[in-house]
Amino acid sequence: MKQQYDETFKKALRTELISRVQKAVPGRAEKRTRLLFGAGALMGAGALTGTAFLVTASAPTPPDRFLDASRILTTLSEPQQANDKVPMAFQDTDGTIVQRDVLKPIGVDAANTRRVGQTRTLTYYAAPAEGDKICVIDVVTAKQTVNSAGCTLLKSFESYGLKTVTPDGKESAWLVVPAGVEKSLESVADEPGWKQQAPNFLVREK
Amino acid sequence: MGNVESDDQVLWSRSIEGDGEAFAELYDRHYDRVFRHAFRLCSSQSHDADDITASAFLELWRLRRKVRLVESSVLPWLLVTTTNVARNHGRAAFRYRRLLSSLPRGVDAPSPSDEYLREEMGEEVTRALGTLTGLDLKLVSLTVFEDYSLAAAAEVLNLTPAAAKSRMHRARQRMKKAINGHAQAKPALEGNEP
Image (tube, rainbow over all chains, first blue to last red):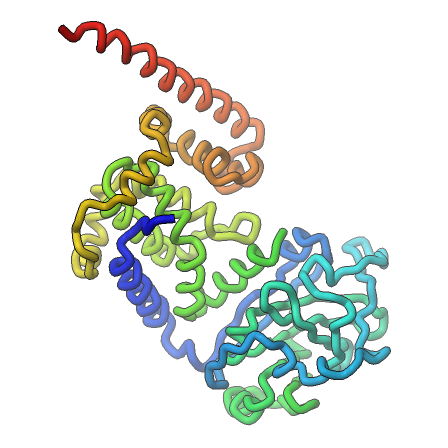
């Protein structure tokens, strides 16, 4: 298709918009919070119901644009183990346990999940997803039901990582790039309780 | 719901938190469709459509606290806003006049793309769109040109599904009449020529 618009103008506007967004929220580089998969989105995806996890992100690591998830999830180069598998079930809003592949709707191949860590009540898994994304899936350990999932673009991962926090704020987990652990911990120095549980997986429990 | 739609939700949340690159990604993702919608509505020059498109994205940021995602996408809101901006072009342009005039433009040469787009849209359709009321125009734009379901369009426009269906029926009738009326008027005018 031929050029439809004034490319010069479009680029200048893009720069102007970035500037406006960044100016509007002072201190944005220190900490950000974002909702990755609220309950509505999950219900729309047909994957899960009744869950609403906040997924937060910080900007502690240098930019990198690789689209290979194994640089974040290094165990992807090894065979999937039994404890890497995400249970194919979730708890419906009425309490019923529903047996279903909840990963497919979010573009995750169940054979690619890897266990990354755990908090008091949740077990966390990560996996590459369609569309050059990476997802973190959390499972209620006691019930072996998928609780929630958050995904982000791999190309953006270096800047933000993937951080999840339970609605009560008592359990948090944070997948970061291996080289970004130190900076990530520094960026949350004012939030006591963060600890490194695995080479690039941080958790916090209150 | 596809992953792209989920991404809009992620990017939008990041934008609200002040992530300029996330907002830029939304801009890149939806610019073409917003521009084409603006061009369809203004039926004139690319530069008008450029201004309308710019105003729509600036409004997206200015009114960010009021923006509602439909099917996890900001596009329906953007398209509705583009319709508003196009219909009130003078007023919206005034708000951003200083900014728009300060942004650099490409060489102002006759644009083959204008003709290309005009041919693609069809003058009759553009004229018929002009006969619709604001709300009906938004409804037709979302469902006919942007392939949103009537339910999704109704949601973004705060209409009940029944009201949307009824409006859609009336809008189709009106457009049909406008197109047929023009086609019938044409030979008559030609017949008056010496």
